[in-house]
Length: 248
Image (cartoon, rainbow, N blue to C red; front, side, top):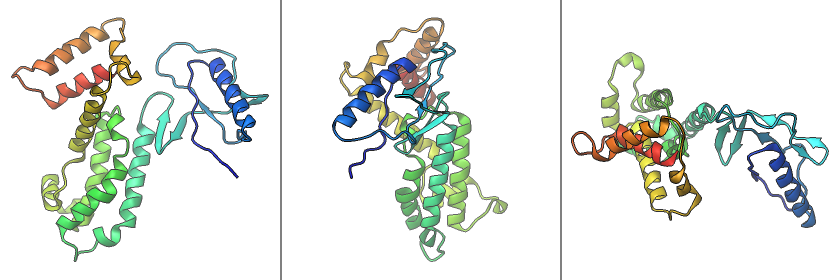
């Protein structure tokens, strides 16, 4: 039996999705495959106040495809409003699952703290930060991840919040950098990868988009500030502002 999964069809309208799905259904049935009527779902992204098609259902032949408010694709959660709250919650849960699986090492008092830190960076943190280079993070998201990671690190060191030990001391004990610094690092690494791509690739075409209103002027000012800086160097916040402007 041949099975394929995790296929996504994208279009700007429900009518376009229906046309693509019909072409895809015919192509699969010609090769001996069938589209699952029970597992197929669709997600409408509402990134703006622009009205979409009214009264048009997404259908697979005569069956109406159910709509979802979020969609899990390749271990990442996509929400209809463009937020990442569910993705953050999911990654934190996965991180705790990895931590519990490795608790025999991370919670063992006989294991040196430096070794625990290396094990944590190799096993737990990659699970938490999967896909973080493309997240449009807010301060609330970073704070949530910092709180959860600090709980893990304190338990590794045999401490609790009642011990009143500073976060800096915990990071120094296990030789682990703050997670917000690693998230900025991953974002800038991805940004460098994007900038090295050819200007004709789809990921670079967004740089030539023209936005209406005052958003472009404000973003241009932030970009100039990020490039030159008041003291001739790039700050982290100005660098991220330039990143968001270039890739938005």
